[in-house]
Structures are given as structure tokens and as C-alpha cells.
Image (cartoon, rainbow, N blue to C red):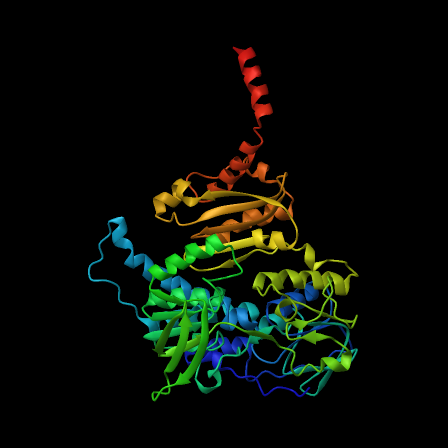
Length: 512
């Protein structure tokens, strides 16, 4: 397999002071690779979240570590993922709050003026402020030998980068995944954005088309609508976020449409073509048997991912992979026992926090003969729409697929005082337990801060705390977290069977 072309740094456009600071942190142009050590305990390829956590954790424990990165330290999360997207989302939420202020009796007059270039400048500033955490300088100061360039395996114990040979006892592949072009007719004829180029925009698209109503597509559709774009969201399946809780996804869909997003779901026969104005894209699509003929100023493709396996020469070291990524066992070991993988390159859970904890497992398994199983991890996730939709463990569809019978208990936010006072009653806390027990097997939270609320349920699942016990946890009043306690109360009421109720009645009659 031939090495890919030199990495592009288009993600760091425009060329302003903030992006120059970022570049100096995550891929300094004047950096000179060190001379390799005689042998490394670990050679880590890829400096996204999984690679950074693996390298830093191993080095702190005293291991000799080399870290290889061909593009930008920090990977997707810092440069083109979590950090820039959440900065943009926070600006859009501020705009939405101002627009809704009149509902609270606060009159702001003539409306909201959004300075989109300033919004993007703020994002670039915050990203550059955070970048020192993932910088070459910081990891060098941790005692790690950082090598910038394409790494490739030349034997079971050697990785080559920039003409230098790094001998290793164990290696970890953490090269992540990237946006990939889905098979859409005409896509190769038009100019389109992905998450890797979206955050280089400096002008707000008047009309924005988005293909894919998964988490990225939904987050950005609502964000750009709140910032003033006319947004058309195209999805092949019904509704949005088809893998999430249907009731929760429906609540989010309604809010997105209130914010001005036009959803074209159940779409088929999608074709794309350029217009006379090369910056525009023409879309033809059938949605619910109705034909739409649209022209948008910019197009975001938010579906399709591909593992970054090119240039690694995995065949030389007998590491198996597929279009889904590198094949690993439950200890994250590849088909070569000396080589492991972590993060998006090998996981269906393509989240920063999942990569973080997979890396912790890899450290134990490579350096200390551990048997940490990735299947033991309880991994929550959250889509940062308004309201947020957070999930951990099973939902009814997954439980049915696994043959697990469940009971479900739901507390709507319309019955939670803090949600009523905040005007945020569109949501719920839904907890699933194994049928006949209070063992929590999954949960969904739809709320303005669902990503924070799901953490308590992740703790309960990790520590095997039953739903009945959550009823005994005291929350400050009024908070939305009370919804979790209320779900515990719902479960405990089911324990009041006619037999138990009869015993109580006899006892109370005796007490009179």
C-alpha cells in the first residue's frame, strides 16, 4: 500500500493569528524530529485522543514512548470535531436564547444581529487557547519522543517515520477515521464541505444543504439555522438520528423544525450537480413522494467515515482490517499480538471519551499483561442539539436484538419543577431495567443538559447501583436532576404489590 499524499492543513484556514498559534502548537513547521532511542516500550501511531492518552499515561508510568503524527496533534476532536463544533453550538444557543427572550417578558426590540465572522473568530480563538493541552511541546516535556511524519511498519518490531527507525516492544495504532464520500450521484461534480472543512468558513451560507441526519448533521443543521441560515437537511431514513431513541429523536426533530430546519427525510433519488455559480450546489431529491429541486450556497456532507489505514503497511505485519477499521479482540489486540489499536480506528463508538478509556485499557494490556476488556466499558454518548439527547447502554431496539427483556420507566420533564421554570419541558428521563429486577441496562435523557445528567446513570451502571436505590439520592431543589430520582420512585411504586399493600393495611390498622 502506497503512502498517502502529504497531509493538508486546510482545517487551519483562514490564515489568522489564532490558527497560526494552533499550528505552532500541533504541527510546528520548524520542528525537528529527535534521534530515536534504542528501543521503546510503546510506539504510538496517531496523536488524536486515543494516541495522546496512551502516550501520556504510559510515559507517566515510566515507559519509554514514541508518538508519531503525520498531520495535527489533537486529531479530529481538537481541530475539526468536538472543540470547534461545541464553540459554534454555544454561540448558536446564545442567539436562540436572545430570540426567545420575549417569552420570559424580556423585550430586546428589533431582533438579533449575528456577526458570523465574529462567531467563527471566537471559535478559532478558543480552539487555539485549548490547543496547548495537545501540543508537541507538552508531550515532549512529558519525556515522549514526538515524531511528525507518516509512520509505517517495516517489521514486527520497527516503525519507520521520516527515514528514522523506531524499535518497539509493543505498538498501538490510533490513527482514527476521516470523512469519506458516500455513493451519491453527482457528488464528485460539486464542491462540498465535511467536518474537516466546515470550520474554515468565514461567511454564513444563506442556504445550507446538509446530507445526513445523524449527530453531526443534526447538530450543525440546528446551529446554522439558529445563526440565520436557511437549512435543508436530507436523510435517507425516516426522521432523524435513526439509531437513537425514537421518542427522543422526535422531540429533537420538532425543535429543529421550530428553529427553521427543513427536514427532507425518507429521501431517495438524490442527485447533485453544479450551477453556473460554482459555489452553489443543485439538489434534486424525492422526500415522502414529493419532488424537491433546491439550490444551496454550500453543501455539508455529514455521513460516511473511513478508517485511516493508508500508508501504515499493515499487510507487512499481518494486521487485519476492513472498511470498518482494524480488527481487534476484546483486549484491543490486533491479529499481530505485538500490535494493539484504540479509538476510532477500531471502535463502533467514535467518541472522544470512548477513545480516552480504550487508551487506558491499552496501557494496562500492553505494559502490565492486563486483561482489560473493552466490552466492560460503560460508554455514554450525547448529541448536542437543543434539547440534547444522551444515551447509555441499551434502548428497546438493542435490547430486543440481544434478546433481553426489559421494563421501562419514564419521567417527563413536564413533571419536573426546574424544567417548568426554565421553560424546557420538552424532554424526559427514560431508564430501562432488566425485567423483574432494578438492574439498569440502559437510559435515555432528553433535556437541555442531558449530557451532564447521563453521567449519574453511567455511574449507576458502572457501580451496579439499582434503580430503586436512585430514589434515595437527594438532589438540590429545584434541579432537572430530580427527574432521575423521580424515575427511581416510579420503580419503587411497582414494588407495592397487592400482597405488600395488604400487609401495610393490616399493620396500620393494628397501629391505630
